[in-house]
Amino acid sequence: MTELDAVVVGAGPNGLVAAAALAEAGMSVLVLEAADVPGGALRTEEVTLPGFRHDIGATVLPLAAGSPAFRAIGLDREGLRFAHPETPLGHVHAGGATLLHRSAAQTAEELGRDGRAWLRGPGWLGAHWERVAASVLDPTAMPPHALRELLAVGLHGSAPATFTNRLVFRDEPTRALFAGLAAHSTLPLGAPLTSVFGVFLAALAHGVGWPVAVGGSQSVADALVTHIRSLGGEVRTGHRVRSLDELPEARAVLLDLTPRQIVQIAGDTLPSGFRRRLDRWRYAPGVFKVDWALDAPVPWRDERLAGVGTVHLGASSRSIAESERRVARGGHPDDPFVIAVQATAADPTRAPAGRHTLWAYCHVPNGSSHDMTDAIESRIEAAAPGFRERVLARHVMPPAALEAWNANLVGGDIGGGSADWRQMLSRPRISLAPWRLPIPGVYVCSSSALPAGGSHGMGGWNVARTVLADLG
Image (cartoon, rainbow, N blue to C red):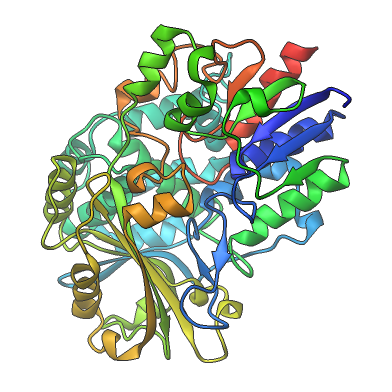
């Protein structure tokens, strides 16, 4: 068999983007995926009732919309389309809801006394979103893509979210909104750098919105596969790799895997010190996810939420911080912070006419077996009385089910490992090219490498550029 230029193990967004970038450069590429369907966390299935299309992993895709990798590849040529809800985000609290609009000015106006601070932070970053995204999603570039914007992100995002809320924002609705954004980090909100998640996600909402892929997130993976094949690359599903020795001859091997799977397939090929490092890799808390098929829209108390794509249910900033702190310490909150997504608010094609889909999750300790279904539904019912009466069917995925569905979701961790500052500085090693493994010609391109989790594909894009440079 003729030697390939590159073999990619894993067809998640990072693996597929890496394969696309290498194929565009004229390289021969083979992608091997254990599942029967490519996409990793970008997969859509009818798990409740026929005609109801649910994203098992990611649904809301601001990172894909703002990613330099996706913009360079241009998947619109392969039929990919994004749809935007009327409003990206709503945060439910005791007084109703606070909305994060696509317009920074409109958001600031509704935030009252905190409006000026919002415009100086997320608003300004959203106005410069292309340079912000390039800097944040390619953090090892030297010199930085946009030094001014990178410094601004550091200024607004380096502190713990709890500190930002005390120092920058004065009113509780704004603090709760920001706490909910920062909680996407899956870290306790008193941890350093948690503000980065809040300001960056808010900036993307203003800059590119929080869209969904028409037809489901599987559409993104399908477009990438179509693009790779059009360039002569091969994507082979139902092919589980158990050892590097099984792979065909290739000049480069790219692993869209987390450290646990890398150790399993690389074995003694890894230097002992680095293997011990991977064995000590810390995974983040998991998620407990529920999908629903609904016979009508969610009956929100605040009717403005009908047009919102993502709904945060966390009441106060204090309760969100306490919920995330308890999970980080191995506990289960009685009143968890819940992230809900009503994809049909933007894309009605995902359900039969007049019907709707909804999913929601909360954070739980990694590997938890505790059933959070009632706690999640109670959260939604409190904000939308009569919600349970509209449920036609539900599909529950605790951490073990998520990991069984996708082995990279270890213990239900959707981010490839904890994103605390220590592990971000060495993801998975300290280097200007941290994705190079200490095995000649082998690289890691998953969310366990910089720039960490999210459906941005930049892990694969950055690695592909390194591979091209290494192979000359």
